[in-house]
Image 1 (cartoon, one colour):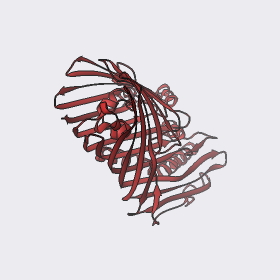
Image 2 (image 1 turned 60 degrees about the vertical axis):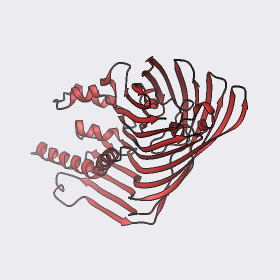
Image 3 (image 1 turned 45 degrees about the horizontal axis):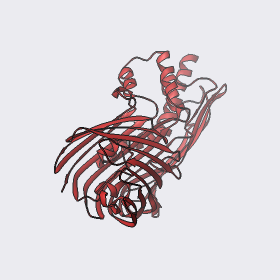
Image 4 (image 1 turned 45 degrees about the vertical axis):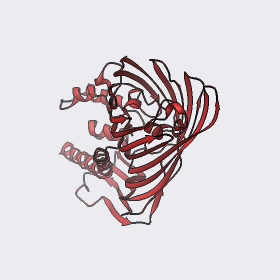
Length: 433
C-alpha cells in the first residue's frame, strides 16, 4: 500500500513538474522547428560558403559580396553581373546526440547502461537545440551594387539536464529537479538589402575598398523567454516545488540594419577583408504583442494530502506595449588566396554578446576549392568554436556558363554523415552574365 501510494505521488510529481513547467518549452521548440522550416530561414543560403565552412569574407563576389562583405564590390576583380534565382540553407543541430545515436536508440528498450550513456552525452548546462535557416528569394548584382531579398529564421532552445534525468530515471529520494538555465528564443524576419562598395586607394595591384549594406527588415514573428525558473524536491516529509515562466511574443514588426565592410587586396594572390554585421540594427515589434506567464507552487505534498488541491498555479496571456529587439552583431575577419586553381580562405568571427543565433565565443572557419575539371569544383571546409559543434563540410556544383548550380552538406567527421549532430545543407541556383 505504501509503495503504491509512493509510486502514485512520484507519478503525480513527475507529471506536474515536467508537463506543466516544461510544456511551454517543448511547444516553443516545436514551433521554432516548424517556423524555421516554413520560412526556410541562418545556415546560409550560399552553398559555396557552406561547403567552405563559411570562410567567405575575403572571397565573396557579386551578389554574394552583399551578404558577406559589401566592401568586396569596390574591388575591380570582385564585381560581377549576375542573378541568383534561389538559394536555400538550413542548419538544425544539437550539442549532444548524433544521427548514429538517434538511429541506435530510437524505439529501443533502454537499459540502465543506455540511460547512463544518454545522460553522459548531455552537457551539464543542458541540451541545446539550434535552428538557423535562410532563403534567398532574389539576389542580383551589377558593378559596385548588389541587391538581396532574404528570409531568415533562427531559434535557440536550451533544456536543463535535470529534465532528461527525470524522464529517464524518475524522481528519487532527496532529489531536486531544476529547470534553471533553460531558455527558448526564436525570431523570423525578411530583409531587403542594398549593398555598395567603393574603392578608396589603389597602387599597382594593391587596392583598398570599403562598403556598406543597408537593410530594411520586416519582422515575421518573435518569441523570447525573459524569465524561467523552477524546481521540485523530494524530502522525508513530502514534496515541495515552485516555478514561473514569462515570455514575450509578437507576429509582426519592422526595422533597419546596417553592415559595414573593408577589404584590402594585397596583390594578385592574397586578400584580407573584414565585415561588421548589424553594426546598427533595430526592430520594433508592433503586431499582436503579448506577454505569457505561468506560475505554480506546492508545499509538503504527502501520501495523506495527495488527493487535495495542494498545487497552486495560474497562467495568463495579456497584451503589452510595442517592444524592440536587435539583430546580433558580429565581426568577421578573413584572409584568402584568390588566384590559381587552388583557392583557400580562413575566417575568424567574434560575436559581441550571446544573442539568438550568435555566441560570444570566437569561431574559426577554413575552406578550400579546387576544380577537378573547369565545370565541377570540389569544395571542403572545417569550422570550430562558438557554441556550435565542430564540423566538416563538403560541396560541389556545376558551372554550365552562364547557369550555375552549387550544393553543400555538413558532417561531424570527415567521412561520416552519422556523426553529424543535426542537419545542415545548402543549394544555390543562378546565372552569371
